[in-house]
Length: 389
Figure 1 (cartoon, rainbow, N blue to C red):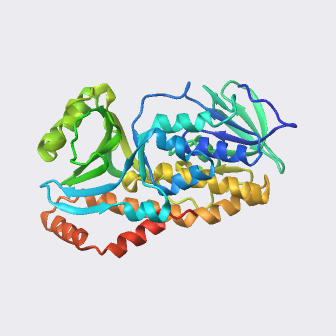
Figure 2: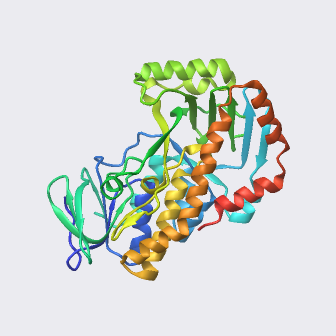
């Protein structure tokens, strides 16, 4: 572990070089803080799936001077289309109002490209790959963390941005409980130049009994797609079985979009069980804090997991600038962020239950309600989602 001390230690040590951890590092460096990020993977990977950056994280990236660089590796989404598996429209929403009110459209990109923009914005050597913190102890003034290689570093604060299965959270809040949603997912990126949706700048989601499929372009030659389906937790399957199952569901419910599966390889299809985290009442213990999924993991049904981590990073950096490198900054950060993240997680969970309904009567009621939803309701939801904490 190559962490170098700054005046006897770092200001902030971050575990996890995902989107939240890297954004925190960029924001903290801009505030004049010394920062190191440790990441157990050997480096930035090109393997992965897509992600949509909504107007709330894009506003953060504008504050950090990175919005144009992120736009350069993204594809703008200007329309959201929601349908049922019969092809009937449930909602069709142009995003002109969102772009006007918040300054940004949704940006669809490859997760690895977004990480690369953030990584390149940091001073050389900020991120240490192939290492992680395996234990830590703190006193009134600092945290001493020990790496997997046995080296130690002292920092004023330690932030766990290490995801749903956060090791930092396990040290501090051993009782934190993950909650399985009852659904699993396939995700992949398919190289495809054909226009599948009739609108290159549209995102479509199709709801069917027990499953749903969503997709959009992330570049002129790539579609990101995901397919969620009801399944037992931790089901053991091979890449070939995953691919075959995805194709079977597409042929049955989403025949217009089966090309998404046909044109990718089994090894490209990522399977992930969908879980969230039951509410943690406190996100820090003295000088050790949590960020993103480590603090408030949400299911992906609002497309806000990465977005909320970016908001966390911005707010935490602001509070560190205001309160200094003290636990009071972590208190203030949680006060600003807790209500919104709880609402996002709760709303996302409810949407996950709605979209897989199998009972035909309940599906009819759901569909009728969605078609009749007033525009003012959607506008109110956007305001709540996209306004920064």
